[in-house]
Amino acid sequence: MASKTVTVGSSVGLHARPAAIIAEAADGYDDEILLTLVGGDDDEGVDAASSLMIMTLGAEKGAEVIVTSDNAEAVEAIAALIEQDLDAQ
Image (cartoon, rainbow, N blue to C red; front, side, top):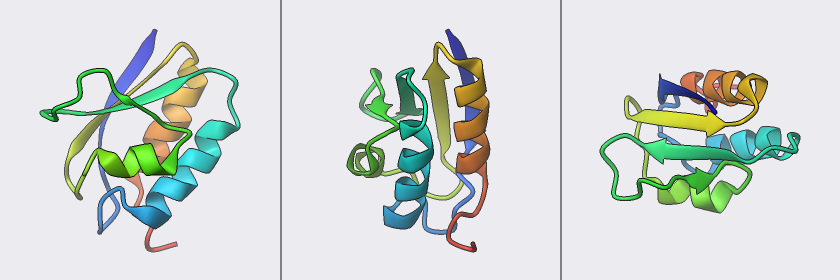
């Protein structure tokens, strides 16, 4: 299983707009992709294909998030999105 720890780049954290962009990208993969907030209460992670679940992480700008999946390409793609300021686009 591939995983990568990344820092949230969006200025407002993983809220509505960034979460929707990430969820749409994750939904394009057949493999399950999980996001886990480093130091958060949930060690099992949330489904990256659900914007609502992403928002439950409460990940603010600068927080660390672990992206995990059996699909290494998906991990890299979702990690790259999380690192961007998706509110600036």
